[in-house]
Image (cartoon, rainbow, N blue to C red):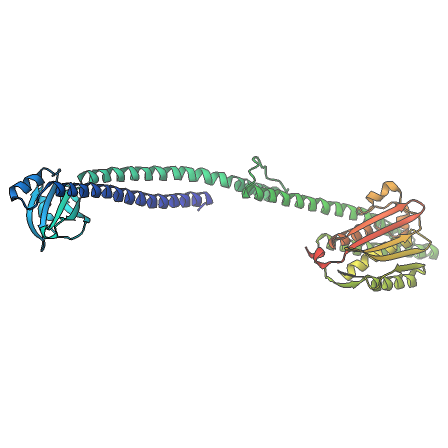
Length: 457
């Protein structure tokens, strides 16, 4: 069953239930109010009769006075104790026979259903004690013929209104269901088009209703935006990676063809070819590892958060790099330890990337400063090398971007290091800033949150 049909049926059934309850309440209150009004009229009549009649007078006189107060289809009785009727007048013998007299010492009112010519009919009976208890009580009974007619009219009106409301509810429910389902239908249609064509497509939002359906459509469109962005990044990554791999593969192929043509007869040429092939293959291997790091970062992997002592970590990294590159790298700090909650391996990767760049593009001393800059821990890596042109600083975090392409190839750079570093810092809810002046050197500043809450929120 379609959702529109379910909504239509449920709204109609719910509306019908509400109408039935309302009809019952209206009918009950109407009957109660009408009967109460009739009771008041009969009680007032009984009091008037008792004021204007002497029950101790002759039977002829009393009954004549009582007849003067009869209305259509009614009776009047005077009843003594033990339900003994002493005076009785009526213009409806059938009614008189069906209702037995009853003595009472207090005011009473009751309704009775009796069988009549046209079915059941309601009768109202009131009983009022006479001032002198020994004189008995006065009883008046009256058919509520007008009430029966009114009841039938009311039933007809309520029934007609119920049928009309049910029909309107059916049409209204259908209209409401179609209005609710329109954005959902558009979404389904768009999804089917995406499934067939394989091309992400947004939902066309015509009315700014700001309701849940609008929110759902907007969320779907944002999801499509992210999907398109992801596909664009994927296509760009494949294109850039292919471009980067093309050069070393071309070099390897050229030297391999050279060896195939000339063999190993020329030792000098063969050694040069082998060295070039090995160098380019190593470069491809490093590039592939970098690609894998980048792919993992773009999946936004969960960080393995632990307490990290930046001073101890930096000392360990600097010792390794000093031994390998034989360079003067100085670590400066005023407070020890300075700890943060972070993924130690990824923070180590960032520091190595920045120090590697400083080593490649400078020949002088490299300085590393670590300090607390609440609510962050600040790591500054400063070199006095070739620097970066001012117009290039805004582009250096882009993937595969290199300021000096010729020199980058000589040093083995892929243009991905700073992009990876920025991605890792972003995962840690931190910030990376670069200040540089061409010919004077470069300063890179890392800001990492000290609070664990700031990272995981």
